[in-house]
Length: 136
Image (spheres, rainbow, N blue to C red):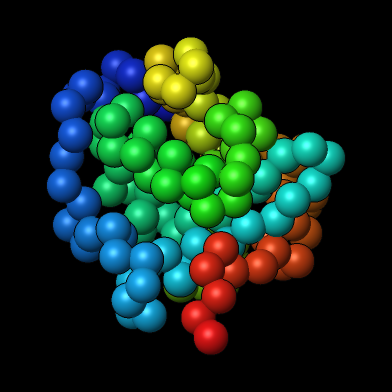
């Protein structure tokens, strides 16, 4: 299942209900974001609660650019994966395919990885990922 985000995105910034802007607050959602580097890509694992709040290109762009700044990474290297566990323990993964034009997002497609050939690989990356920001 693929959802085209540009059809429902508003092209103005929206506030996140739980702002993730304070990277230095140890209670911040930034400490729930995980990273795995593999094959020239930076896999960014963000809780689905964060991903579901990103409803427009400007907010997505700011979110990813903050992460790219921390990692000293380039946009084309960044792959965003949303993750959550259902009440029965089943892992759910969504991939965000972001198209960039220089430093601007021009399109984004969200698709589920559950049941796909990529699921086991991405699950393994998540299991071996590290915190984006070390809380110590």
